[in-house]
Image (cartoon, rainbow, N blue to C red):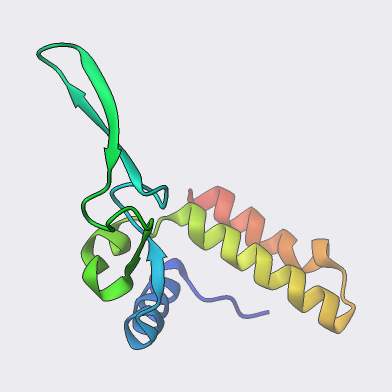
Length: 111
């Protein structure tokens, strides 16, 4: 089975997201709408409304593309490939472990 490399997957993901420009979790508040405002001088902190997403927790992809792209890591790639392999195995009635095993072995060796 042919599985896209991390670099190819990342490029395709960025192209797809750029074309669709969907709402994504805000990178400043991780989708919660609130951020911790910690003051080092007085050793106190408060939770305040996120200014980037105006408390909605969501922003358009193109507004935060650079921040979002830097968060596309190997873990995200691994989870998405495994999810796709599960769907493929269910669709084709192939054994999931036989499909995923070589990918997992190669991924472990490389990372």
